[in-house]
Picture: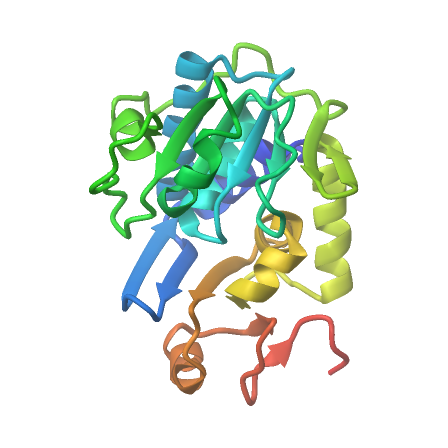
Length: 266
């Protein structure tokens, strides 16, 4: 089996192992939505997004892409697509939008666009509605291009112009900087430290996931062969039933009686 050296390799490993098994399930208790993506479906979103970034915005190994998005299944696709292009991610999930100098492209949630439009000047801007079915931005009239509309026309198979180099920058968030290879190493180390095992189905609270960053909520589970259940705007009274229905085996950032909490002694 090939050794994963970049985040794109982690996703490829998941798809090779079992493309049909649910990989990311996302709940939002504020809207009542539930979205489930298999490894194959997520890989398709990643490929289309990567083609869009590479072909329309020239994103590649020398690029830095700002991701102004909450923890969400579409954010997972954007992050993995950026890394598939060999580019670096500036993660702003726990930061203000300030300090976006040196950015080649910004992908932002629709409700963050107004604050960004003046600040980023001529930098390309893509807006995401975060609609549960991937729909476009309703009622938006600003300069940002609509991710949902743009990505539909992108190809389903992605081949980078330059293969991602594990030694190039992969993530900049606050004072933390990691290479693409460093992201994979950090994911493996964190998965081991938290006690994530193959086949785990991990329930992650949105607030904890945002604070911990994408290595914790996305790459560590992928590295360990686990699946992810994201819970946004979590309703505490629904957690026990949801954990049972979704066959959750571990949690991060929330407690469910009878389910092990990652990072805590048994």
